Image 1 (tube, rainbow, N blue to C red):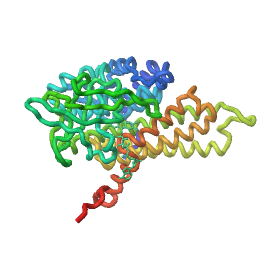
Image 2: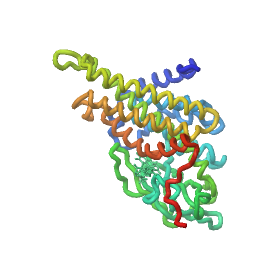
Image 3: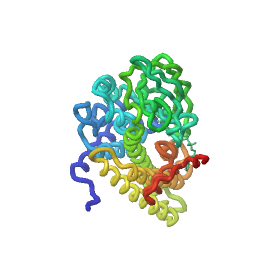
Image 4: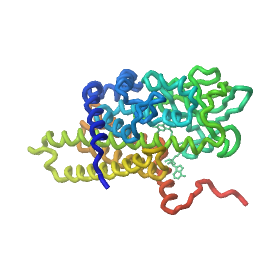
Length: 385
Ligand SMILES: Cc1cc2nc3c(=O)[nH]c(=O)nc-3n(C[C@H](O)[C@H](O)[C@H](O)COP(=O)(O)OP(=O)(O)OC[C@H]3O[C@@H](n4cnc5c(N)ncnc54)[C@H](O)[C@@H]3O)c2cc1C
């Protein structure tokens, strides 16, 4: 057993770090406070080969590993937290499910712009009445000739105000076995991207409405029975969420550490107060613990998609560690930590959202408990006899 990165992985991480320092450090605060996607940075990352890192070269990817993608998202986040969203969008988000299951023709149509940092794909899974209970989704897709007709609505989709392509979970009929997904392009008649609303993390989302929206049959991604495959792809999205939670915790930690080394009160540096030293000891330990669970899940996913159990443990650990550390870092920084002059408060707000997105921490614990007992625990009430 070896807890160090391989020399090749370390060299890759160092190269991404140097690129981020050189190209992304300036403007990190400004990007974080803009509600918009950082398109300019997206094109820089695309040119640098940081989109599609683990995708096959035949698909326009870099042919790297999931570990490379995780190292990249973390190194970028350590310099410019908002730019890590670009690495997420180009490697871990719905694009990952798309690359796994799309036809050659679908890839030809959509991947060049997505991997070029010129367009975004957004995931429409959650509905007003289907959140954690995602299989209760009601958006329907009815086959009619060589088209599907969509009706329903979606909420909370990341990047929805600026995305061009939407991966939409739909049902083709009743029951779990009839759930699948389709691709919907912005501008499709009957498909409306509503007025943007804001999350407390500064991100915006638009409600999505489908009123007899017609899409070509060629836009089918996964037909009936596709739900399990979709969720398998979604496990990679969860690792991106976990990686950013951890990296933003570390980002806040690094700022607070510098602050504690230089800020003086009562005639001495903050780091000389034991009450703060113990906070740093706790913070560091939690970061290191979560990092191990993250790498374990990543290595398991190196040859295919990561397992649901390891992903749940990694995401839970990284969400909780990131949140604890960023919040403590804010406290150590005093008023400066609470001010938008530093990125610490931004890290706190962003990590908070990831404890809900991509499987809330409660739903992750439900999943982990199933592994503990080797049983499934249906969350729905038993049917009346
Ligand atoms: C920042 C952010 C980004 C998001 N991005 C996307 C996106 O790109 N695409 C998309 O489709 N959706 C997205 N979402 C939506 C997200 O997937 C849902 O918010 C999440 O699944 C929870 O659903 P809900 O908000 O309806 O809460 P609910 O399901 O109503 O849950 C409310 C609370 O009850 C708890 N709870 C529910 N059921 C159980 C249970 N069985 N056991 C224990 N506790 C339970 C939950 O954990 C939560 O704390 C995003 C959300 C956020 C915050």
